Image 1 (cartoon, rainbow, N blue to C red):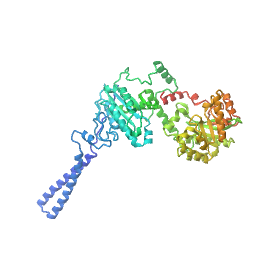
Image 2: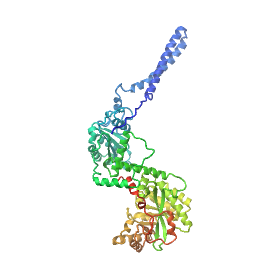
Image 3: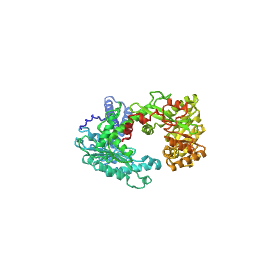
Length: 625
């Protein structure tokens, strides 16, 4: 594959030291000319000793000033033709510059990372450009490019580096970064360029025969970084996620450098089946084209591809991963979904509850065991995606967390649910409305003002709002979570512990937590009618909840046998597909105006997966599978 030639670059030589030096030279020349004119004028027409003496003093002072300005600049300038000396002898906060492939051949400012002495991002980008663009402008420290020289790039990202900084401080983190730099430099071949891109990311640029051995180098790097080290960083040992990408320019179509072991299990038939399934999907096109995308240089594209490979390795739990176009497609789709989510949440004012709304709230009934009436409704968010149809929360909630959109989404769901509840309450149906809150939102200072504003806007009584949190959330940040829970209860808002029995299941926090409800996880419900041990657990949990004054709601009730078992155990309310699937607000009135159905209605609203033919594909895309 031929590569486009790089556009030429211009160098600005009229700034910095050059400007100051030229100014001092002009001042000195002006003083010299003024002195000569004074001598000539005094010879033709004597000015008198006082005037001549005064003028001489002024001119001498100006000349001295010009010489002082020039002296430091001239002294700091490197010898002609040797710009390496100043880089090697400059002050270095790390000590002596690292040898070998780390800084060899680097010149000028901005080419070294101050902490490790490695090349920095700018130096790597320059070297990549020179290696990937034959005939382009050369870059210091990079061999000349040609069409026959293979190029490989490794991207190394330390695992759990943030935890090290949080636990032991940034000094320990810096020590680990310096140690990692030394180990990468020791493993890299002699002519490789090793760089620190920032944070805990490092890169290794390989050329020619060394690039052909990139897999071996990557494996050695992974082993070296994970090896035990000295007690810097409190003896912290880390692993690395390493991405590997080749410049595919010199490769023949049938040449294969490395088959990723993680992908080797897919035989030809499996690959054909996967391709056919994607092609048959209604929206199975190539990666969506973003109008804002700009053309990338060869260096930028290789950096992008190796980053995709690194994140693929990190998602797999570490190790080395080769760039795979399928993962690239998944990364592009995931990034586009994140942008579309942000846009869908960007509108302000009244929540969009119309037919064209993208982020919508569906509701599932919670049925009272004693009366068969709907006692509460759980609000569940859905995304009506313009390309993929109704997307299930499993696909986009993880993206919401990653993009820091949890607070915005929670506010949207909370306001929408309470405004819908206001309509039901005005019609005479005083049902509770339950809204799920994530760990990051529960510990956020924005939650309480958000709840206050939503309650005031809707006019719903605080006692009819239930905030659902998982027991894992409560144990992750116990002090802050407990403080927030108590403030919610002080407002009259109810608190539900969701998915009870699947997390820590610690009984100690139940006595301190001001909860009003326990929700038994569906994992118990599925076996309660057939497993005596599970039946005993359910009965014991019901008794515990009642002794603590808590309402017990059983989730996942899908058949009559399970319903009979949990009602016999003493459950207060049940929730599941037997009563109804999550449905839009328009379906709720049908549940509220009569007895709740005890069997799934034949026209029950479909699940997100059932109603969206393209959902399976988008799930596969964003997960990279």
